[in-house]
Image (tube, rainbow, N blue to C red):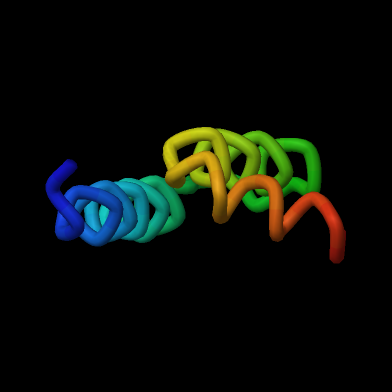
Length: 55
């Protein structure tokens, strides 16, 4: 399996998170939670598992 694939997925997810946060017109905790959840869902599975253990 290609070892660089998780890095590409992480970069894509990070770009997505940054672009979504830039476009937030109204800052609300619900919207921020939604954007962060979407970001986490786009991460490689092993990172999602690690994050869920500390969140």
